[in-house]
Length: 137
Image (cartoon, rainbow, N blue to C red):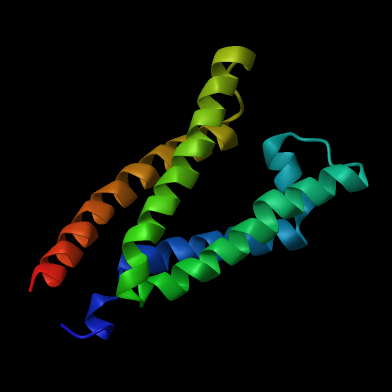
């Protein structure tokens, strides 16, 4: 199978989502702060939001675009995405236990993170199996 036919559509969709969310945060940090009900009235708070939700998501999304078309990157990138999504979900779950139930936006993010971690795990297993078969031949 050619390199082109090994493009991972899920990674393309994730990449576009990460890049769009990151750009939104970089240019509209006040709107994200409202959705998160965070106060962004200081330079430090805006800097943290732009760094953690903006720059990191844009570059991670760009990396996913590259990995989507590079079969040897797909297995580790799925694993990294699983770890990132599960880590975000874990932090939110701990916060729910310690701090209480957050707003609808944060609850939606938690559901998306759990769902994406599971979806990426499913694709990770398929890609890992495919790569193991290719290495055996």
